[in-house]
Length: 116
Image (cartoon, rainbow, N blue to C red; front, side, top):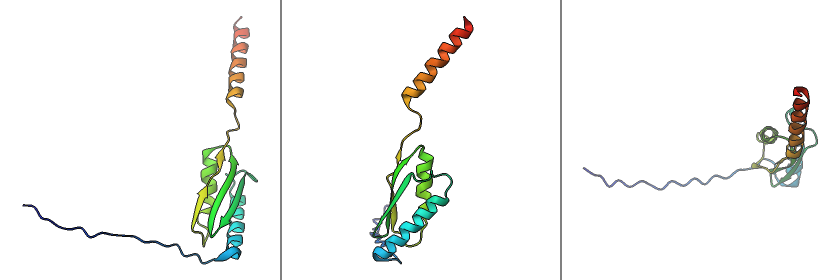
């Protein structure tokens, strides 16, 4: 037995309404975002820049790890009045591949001298 039931189409039209409007609201949000980043011990000081346009936070800058990038985004996502967060922070590891290669070479040379 088959039934030809029709499923109604469901459409979600969600609109974020900002309680802070205009440039004054953007300045307030930016200040709160900067304070939130400053209070977060996992985000290196002065490594992340904040800009706000129409209640949308944009994070830029450089950090050493993915966890630091994630922590910066988490620190600002619950600020009242924002519409969203774009996290464009780049990850620049403090250790370079060349530096690691040199350390390995030096360790091998040390071990060879000790064995000789």
